[in-house]
Amino acid sequence: MPVSSIEEECLKSLKAKPMSVSELAKKLNVRRDFLTGYLESMKDRNLLDLVKVGKANVYIVKEGRK
Image 1 (tube, rainbow, N blue to C red):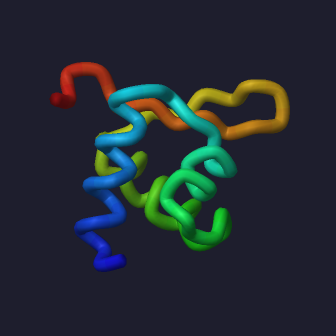
Image 2 (cartoon, rainbow, N blue to C red):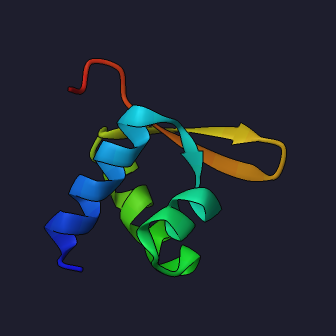
């Protein structure tokens, strides 16, 4: 999957429902450790917010993003 496709699919999926890295990796059929790098990059660019729920990192689309 090309980089832009991964980011687009992440945003599309997370707009529908906040998900943990594991949930999202399973949905997109990619490795969790691979996806984490993309999610961190997107968080650093203010596209996503990160919420800790127990041990899980749950990502949500930053408010104001369409």
